[in-house]
Amino acid sequence: TKWGPQGPNVDNKCKQEDVVMKKTHGFTLIELMIVVAIIAIIAAIAIPNLLRSRQSANEGAALGAVRTLSTAEASYQAAALTMNSGIGQYGTLAQLATPTSGAPFIDNVLGSGTKHGYNFAVAITVGNPPAFTANADPQGNAGVKAFFVDDSGVIRQAVGAAATVASDPVQ
Image (tube, rainbow, N blue to C red; front, side, top):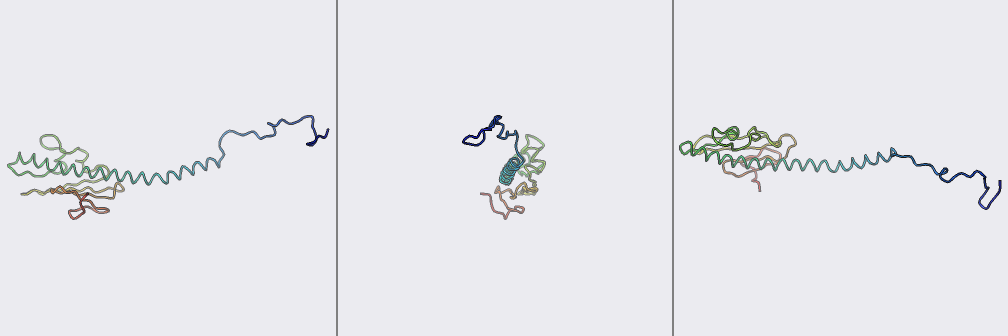
């Protein structure tokens, strides 16, 4: 062995790439855990917003359906007025969905009483003058607002309870 300025010179020198550890392919467990943690944080932020958006969409659809019911009742009454000696009565959900003559005033899904996570109910008062009320109440977590409309055409809403004629009008 000869001694040089940097230590002994060995005849069978190791190559530098042999000394450096060869990198293995794939991910370590800690890297995978970090990725899973990041995905969980993103999901924790996104899921509540998604649920609020869905509730808001259901409430908007229910409000639109209540407007449709109000318009359908006015159309049904006008059609009944021409057929029944000047006194036009309002119709139930079933009568609005499947009238005895002519095209339906509402679709069959709304006529079934359930649409977009809301229960719809129509009550009619036969008489002179006739009257109707319609309610849309959320099922489960479909929404927090309930809606109401009567023959006046004013749509009302209530949060967390059934809407009535005394509830605030929709702005």
